[in-house]
Image (cartoon, rainbow, N blue to C red; front, side, top):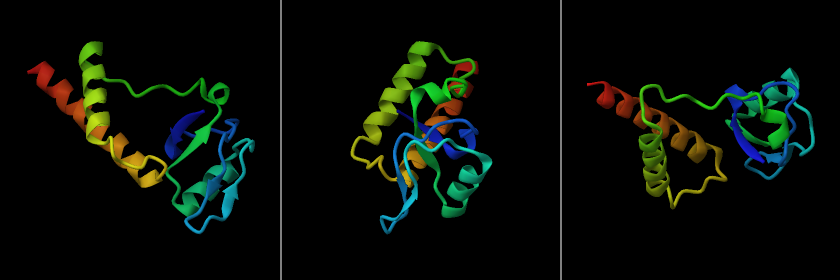
Length: 115
């Protein structure tokens, strides 16, 4: 199971975990294969990510970190995970916040290494 940001969801990916709204109502059941319609439904509900089966997302590219040594990238990821260690990652807002903070930190590190 892999957590995928909404903008990286593609038709053909398979949902691994039910998606529910804040009232506990199921929006999409696990096992559904995403089409444009299901992706639109998630956008409508304000869902920012979904858990998908590993095999169905092999084509997703990991965000690149240009001009950063792999060791430094690993250190940055560990540091951000430590900072967010008490966060509830079951909540989509926290996942998105973590992703954005990590992305910003990586850009900062890339800029610092180039100077």
